[in-house]
Amino acid sequence: MIDTNAHVERFRELSRVWQWILLATIFMVAFLAWAYVIAPIGDNWAEQADRIEFDLHRTSSGLAMDAHTKNSVMIFGPLDLPNKKAEGSLTLIESVQQILANRGITNDTFYQSQSANIKASVLPGVARAGEKIERIKGELDFESKPDVAIAVIADMERSPDIEAISDLKIDKLGNGQVRTRLTIEAWVRTR
Image (cartoon, rainbow, N blue to C red; front, side):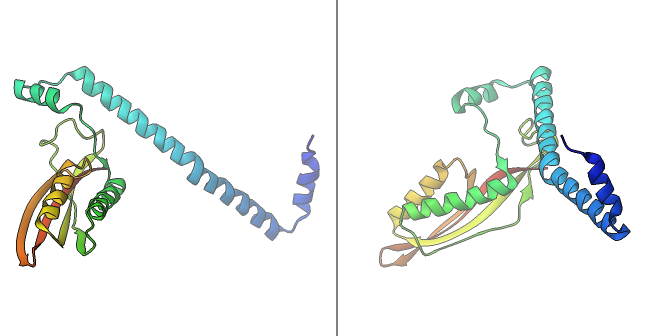
């Protein structure tokens, strides 16, 4: 068994400065343990509870859908929520680079522009409680053979990480090459 009296006596024998340093160190260790271990767990639980509460409210309130929307749900299947912003941004870059690498394109230029909010009225019931949906745009420019450019565009249209190709321009360069410029969009969730 630990004799706390001996430790208390050793603490009291220290000079006042060392007592304060020791107390400050104990406080900092406790605070950092709380900030980096306990608080994130609590935040995660709160987020899960908010999501469950929102899902319960959304499912219990009922959603009026017209026949066209019901048919779309039956055809396209369940709705997958977009990634969170940091994950979605990284996933967009990785998806574009993977598609280009699969098609052997190495001379490309890709950059992301500022994100823009999507109105909640456009996508009712998609965002969770306290979240909003943002549109991330990326500009892509590459040179290739025409059939490779078409295959890249088709791959991007098929990718679940890319929501839309909003602007597309293909210019003939000569030597059987084309220059393809397009704007792609990904939707992400933010708080």
